Length: 159
Figure 1 (cartoon, rainbow, N blue to C red):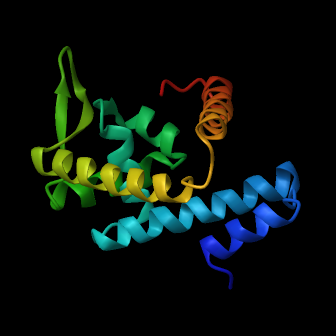
Figure 2: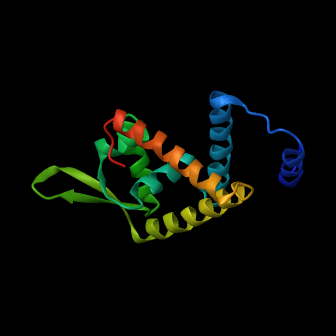
Figure 3: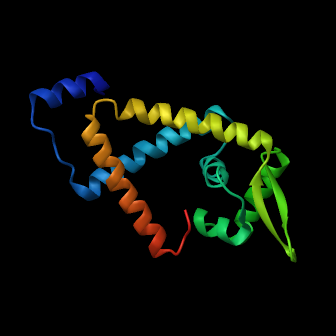
């Protein structure tokens, strides 16, 4: 397997192979999932637990909204929150005016872990994109944002 520098050297000498939008995005998703899996594993988390921390990083949210964002059945989302609550990563917050409803929010411990995980993911992605010029990184950011926001709008999600 070629190293990053070997690939960068090859690309500077040869024409860059275009995988096409389908294979390129699928291979990129594999790469990002692998990166997230490694970061999650270093903290004793599954990828879905890592995603939970990411969703709750800047908000509290109801169980239905959480299950929609994570694309889980409500019972699976409840189990995920139960396990995270046992690890003291999240807390359930009563909704004023609705005794049956609860929101889920990060605990102090969960907030600290979410910050640490975010910093590690940011470092890994910065390393991954280090060979791109600043304009290419900006373009990649805009394109990824367009795709993510388009999907969120299609699924009526608030990100």
